Image 1 (cartoon, rainbow, N blue to C red):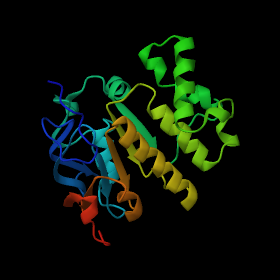
Image 2: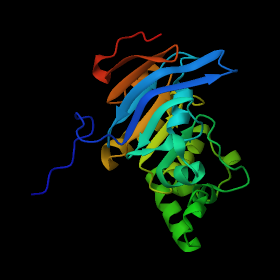
Image 3: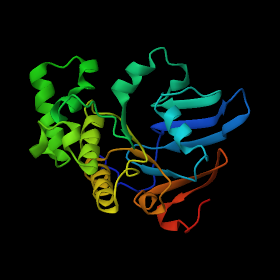
Image 4: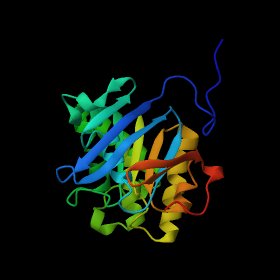
Length: 245
């Protein structure tokens, strides 16, 4: 008998998509303890916000989750595979991880359509297939009318929409967003969060988002609060208090 799909935000069951076990990360020859024994899990279809003040370790943690950096101690598993021991981190990222950054990181000499195609080169897709998929993704994020525009001709909100389309290019298993509204005004920030919430709600996208903004965090199902490199709390967004620092 076919089981119904899990409702986004419902309690997760089964093996986690992402599992973090006793992770440590130091800098400056051990003088800066960025992460100190962090452990948690993210299940398929969850929307998790990681919140905390500057220096709390949240962005360092996101970099480890996306195999952009290596832990000094501990284990990080993605679908059961320990990604702290990858031989090809770049290949792993290309196949499994979608990234959205505060600074957009669009290539300035490429159009919106071309920027979205960049991750597809790793997958070896034919030109016609790349262009078709890039158009579809730009339509999804509301940028179908700006295909041939360079980043300099786009607003901050439009650039972030293109960046989100690019993050979905290779059908990632998880989307990691690092302060995705940090460079945007309140109107564009609200629109980008509506877009991310829609991807989670309508497409079942697993999303881990780092932010210092309490209102952004409230959009998630679950909120992990970081303080001094450790998890201070892990709770449903509905239970959030006004202060986290």
